[in-house]
Length: 266
Ligand SMILES: N[C@@H](CCC(=O)N[C@@H](CS)C(=O)NCC(=O)O)C(=O)O
Image 1 (tube, rainbow, N blue to C red):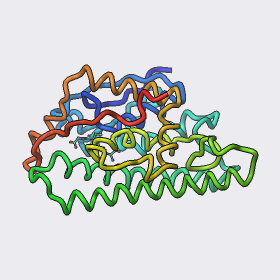
Image 2 (cartoon, helix red, strand yellow):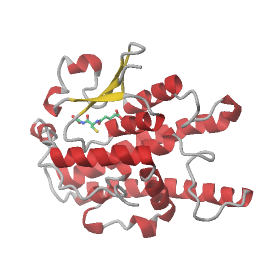
Image 3 (cartoon, rainbow, N blue to C red):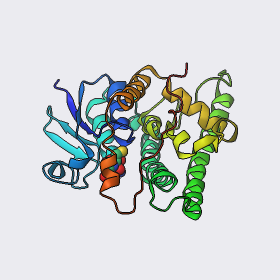
């Protein structure tokens, strides 16, 4: 099999391409990262691949398929290559199979955009300390984490009532294994420290199930390998994200990043 190509922007802080790398790594599929400076993504030739001018884009040379939007790319990889059902369910678990889509859509429509806006108004927006916007998106982020925390708590209760499992065993969003739905949340989860700088959100205390789940996802060997590689890229590459700020009249500066949460924890 030829490597699947996935475009990413240096130095790699942007979370969306990493969702795809995590799924590819978990499935043991070969892939290449195509690094493209943020300066180039709003113009041809890149916009011929991705009309939205954002990252990631995937090219699968094995099937001659080019796709954009990380959720669509994940769906494609799972449907095409996860024949052993490592990260998904099939029709004999029909509801679980489709609930994975509910969570993936929730990641794409809620976690991504709301976490993204919290990042924007906390760090990048030209008007600093615009408190109503910071609060609005901060509250949305907490609401979203709360939805995940409650759902995971219910999964734990269900699991405890059904089996001899202990309270320390991991629980996942759907069914009894980690799936692509859990994995899709990982790259944004690691950025929560930057979204709430100076320890202004105590995740462990306020959202304990969420905290356990996101740590369990981050410590899976394949996921961990990808997240640690992202850290290395952040440490060693030039951040072309400045080019996003340069072209946006309403942007002031790049964030000061806090250490990623859950990466490197044992
Ligand atoms: N919904 C899109 C979001 C893509 C997105 O916003 N990607 C960021 C990087 S993580 C980007 O390309 N930012 C550059 C820009 O906003 O110009 C997806 O999940 O693929």
